Length: 356
Image 1 (cartoon, helix red, strand yellow):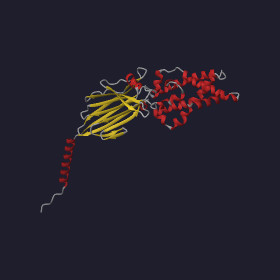
Image 2 (cartoon, rainbow, N blue to C red):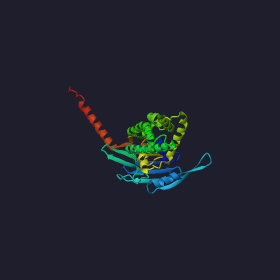
Image 3 (cartoon, one colour):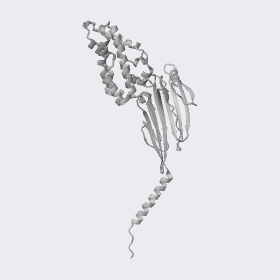
Image 4 (cartoon, helix red, strand yellow):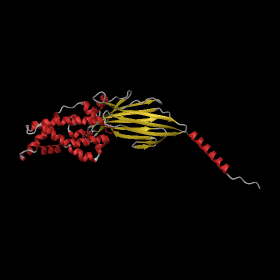
């Protein structure tokens, strides 16, 4: 069964998203951004593929910045085999005020489906201090709205196909219309709850107890077959095991469902889909002292983020940091003025001695 066909079964209309990032092979994107006091930027980008298939994925599905070089690293494994890692690395320099070109651009099967990042760095020259504001946004092609539309269409197609297979397997003891009604009666509540959860929380919904304990089990194959058996109620109880086995075959027939429209799957799962885990790391060094950031870790004037592609499925993933550099001479000058002013005030307030 392919990943695409698996997505068409009800458990994977939602649970497929949990599989993103759980596959063995992966792609890593590592960035290092250094902002100089004048606002110029040096950015190093590394793209790391665990195997040849992921390397091909980098070469065909990504727009890699020009001017980089490929290298390989070989590492022995405990079983005596060797694994090869493929690395593409490029360093680019941007002048103050120059637009910083995106360096994470992944294309879907559908041409206008793109996941990408956008980087902006604002420098404000104040009288007392220079402030720096770094923002980087990652977005996928899918949105919460597109995922809802796709989930409904996939579910409807699955119910229609499964109902026809049930009618055929049970030799018309149950009609397709009866099967369709039973499936919709059972699947509609958890489907709507799942859609509502995604609408409210995005991909974070899949980490909630409501999804793990209530919705996900409802889409389990055995639970679906139990619900159908209860709905159809064979006239002869002894036939129940046979009916259940036939319904299980009808369920497995779903592998034949050819509704693998790339556009529909990418509206649900984005351009990353189930092809690989994509792990991202970004380190930013700003002048002066970092005054605020949403980074997971910070050391001195360096902030570091670590996340996965699923973190910007349906919603923007935002990296942000602010720093400030005080203008020493002006601060010192103001300090001296304030000190002299304070001394003058004290001197004026000091009581004068009466003449003897």
